[in-house]
Image (cartoon, rainbow, N blue to C red; front, side):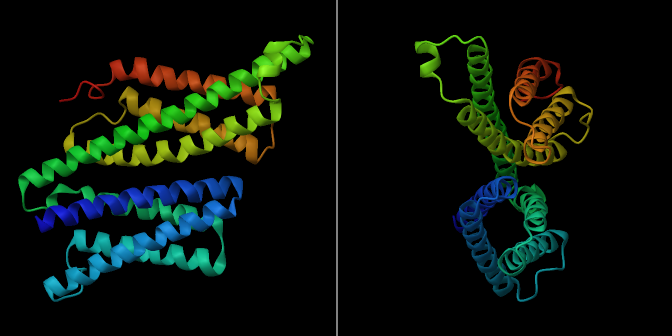
Length: 277
């Protein structure tokens, strides 16, 4: 019973870490200090939980936990979180903080969901199944964010067309102004990109554990990374190149077509997605 509780606590820690990474990404792109503060305290709570786990493990084994690869992974994740907190607190280098946390999340996810560390075969299989569940949930949530981003871009194009043709009327008044539509589209893209990235990390780990003979050039995998690239370019155009307006909205609409193709077509062409049992 205690081992099940500790397993659930580890999973909860990974979820908290994921939320922290999402907020750090939002701050990294949008320079939002409030998001940075919330991300910092979430990460600090993750560090406290990690430290407690580490302390109890040292008491249980009577030694420093670095003698096996799984012990080393956990200690490595703890070191990365510690460094990330220190950099965020004293140096405030956002670029390093975000990518350190991405690396830390990968290491912690590998440690938490690796079935070889569990003595119970049932527990190991349950952990792998829950890893798949979290992967699917995060991927679908990212698709939801991209869908809303697409809707706002579509409304932007509609509003733009009405204004250009000087079609004044109730339809125009019911739409938000162009600046607000573009900003909302951008915000939902910011939410979707890191969520899809974390979902892909967990999905690839699941595939590595469950499908050792899987083709890594599977259409679903290629489509997912193509989708991630398309929306990353969207954010790059908006934040770095400072591109706004119709062209940016058209890029967003085109990127959403990849969402639809990846979900409906590539899912059918995939050798394991949706049909794996």
